[in-house]
Amino acid sequence: MPLLLGRLGDAHETLLLIGIPDRDGIVHVRGWSAEDWGAAPRSRAERANGLLDMLERQAELGRSMNQSIYAIRLWLRGEGIAPR
Image (cartoon, rainbow, N blue to C red; front, side, top):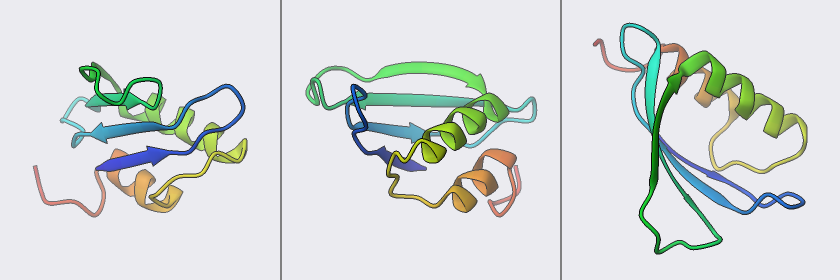
């Protein structure tokens, strides 16, 4: 899932490519920042529920997103996507 987070305060605009959560609830994320769009992406693996919590907090703070929180929840909870 491509997720573009808008700029808010000191936080730069950020593009995240979020993989499908695996059976253990781990999701792989690649990210780029508007500080340097041409840089290599930062890659990490984290718990899907932790990422969801962080994104929900960002939305509550007013950070814009190109995906709805509802769609992000479905994706990170493994609902509404093809069977694994």
